[in-house]
Length: 189
Image (cartoon, rainbow, N blue to C red; front, side):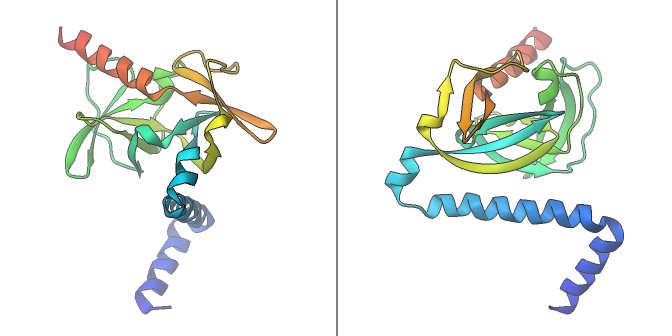
């Protein structure tokens, strides 16, 4: 171990202890699984889909990687007064100011700030705040069942992801983003 690694390790123990190591270990494992998924043969990648399991308050949701540009954690937010419902504020991400919306609020689960930000793909940057990044899954496309959501969340759910004996509601990211842009248009008009 290099001396600077030793110092970093001691700092983490002093500041966050096991909680900091747990988050970092889980982030490293998810990053490796994500990277390994792209190292697979093209035919296998096309027959499967990358999914992230997100925790929004106490609800776990599946979210396809296809609509996401990346993730950030523990970003500082500058609140905006008088914005549309669910708008938490602005965050500096990759050299740009990005509006951050509460995914919990958009799903009708209460207005709450999570520590994670999902960056949506698109011409205009937008981030969705949520509570936990639980795991990465690569599943067969046949595991996605559109139009069959389970109970629990009423808004922006497009179907169900079945994995083993469990299932997750599938977040309809295009629907969430359409709601964000509709709110922004109403506020401007």
